[in-house]
Image (cartoon, rainbow, N blue to C red; front, side):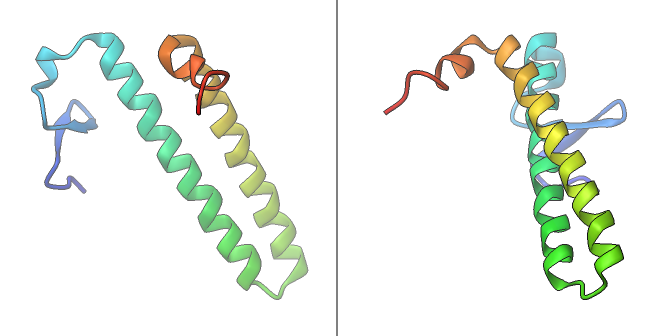
Length: 96
C-alpha cells in the first residue's frame, strides 16, 4: 500500500519529496536500508507482543526464535549503514 508520502519506484516505495531520478544511487540504497531497518525493528516489537500474549510455551519458543532472527537482520542492516554512511558511523562514538 502506497502512503501519501511515497511513490512507487519499480517495485519499491521511496519518499516522494524528491523525484527518484534526482536521487543518487547511494541515496536510494541508504533509503532502502533505513526503511528496512525500520521494518525489522517493527517486526521485533510485533514478535515481542505475540510472545508476551501467548500462553502456549511451544509457540512462544518459535516466536522468540523469529524475534531473534529479526534482531540479527537489524544488526546486519546497521552494519551496512555504518559502512556506507560515515557520518552515521561517527555518531556511535561521537555523540552528546
